[in-house]
Length: 286
Image (cartoon, rainbow, N blue to C red; front, side, top):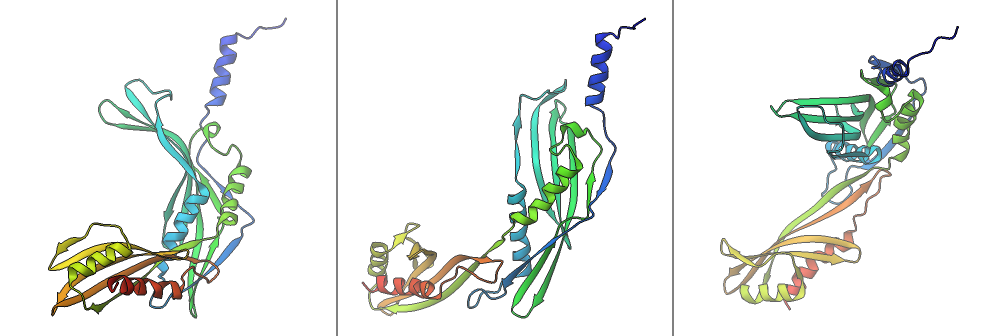
């Protein structure tokens, strides 16, 4: 005699299997690798690159390599008594003293009518060890892949990586995608004299250069911010023109941002930077 299984019972069993909650567990990784980056400590005259700048820049690069999506999710199955919430799918990056903690998460967040929050999420977390050494005129950074992944309690079927192998592969890919670039800034301040009165000097500067702001009067000076260009390089110059014994005293502060790469090089160009001051002098005297 063949027993018939009720369709409802089969469906219930199927749903139960789909939404089964897996316990939290660790996933060891037997093979790890590392990548080394070298940054010039002094990428431009008078510019000192700090360890903090490098680590902050590397964190941004890891976040970019990991990628994530976050936004409103009004179409989700909102629980009764809760308003439509937000979904998160991707990576969260945190920096500790000796590692970057990279958490891949998929889940939803809801807010109830009373203001309480409810989350349905699944996380995989791992630490990428980082070591920074000062060797000669360089900062040498070694970043390693994780030796362990940690899965939080939750439903594996809702997660980004449905197998341990895919999760491990995703973390290992992070290193291969990294080619870090750190942003640095060269600043130079100074002054020079011009034989014309401040109004004439300010008029000449505005005629010859691209002003970023309107000329204002503050503290007895005519102040303007200019955008300067030299080939592919650009800078911002804050200029103040003061009356000085019937002529003018021009004070300036030139700021140029540039990239420092992980191979000991940078995009700073000394000749281009010198030309920025010369542009101010020429324009003021025109």
